[in-house]
Length: 110
Length: 114
Image (cartoon, each protein chain N blue to C red):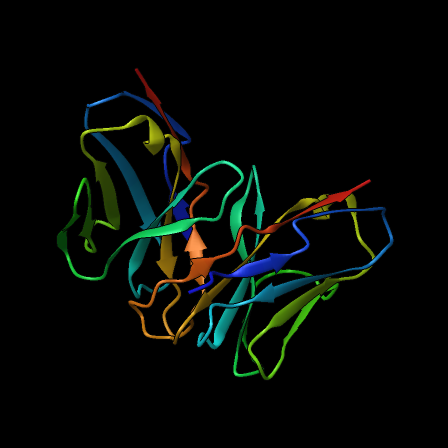
């Protein structure tokens, strides 16, 4: 089976750094994705990790440890517009579909 | 380049009815996947189509079905609607099926069952 865990909610202050964790236990692994979803909008692609290590993209970075079944998304210099849900997803090996966690709702406060 | 387009955006149906949702992928994308999103369960995979063939199916009852046309547009049908089918239905497209290829989502169809 597939099990992907994320914290349900997090709150952080504007200008700060926040780390959103994701742990997974899946029958196979073919890469891990992070998506951002604002309320009432489509999820939008943020990052992809398939090898261990850190991938940096501007204010957003994503880390993966395959041996630990663990990833995190790091958001720096938080802005109010970063208030959204962040979805961790693992790609099903041999298929194109994604298995999603329930998402972490991040609230950025002034 | 236009994004993934889903119609309609909102639908209200009653129990027992059936419904058809439509998805137009990004131009040139041949893979279309459907997901159901509910507050408690998050996004759950329904099925995936590639070049008019269903390649993969999630753990949903047979009341949920879909198809893909030669222009890659896809439809999803739910028959004998139940209250629990109330959800946001998201369609996602990708250019191919390489592992690193991200899926691009539409805004979804919000289905409410009365």
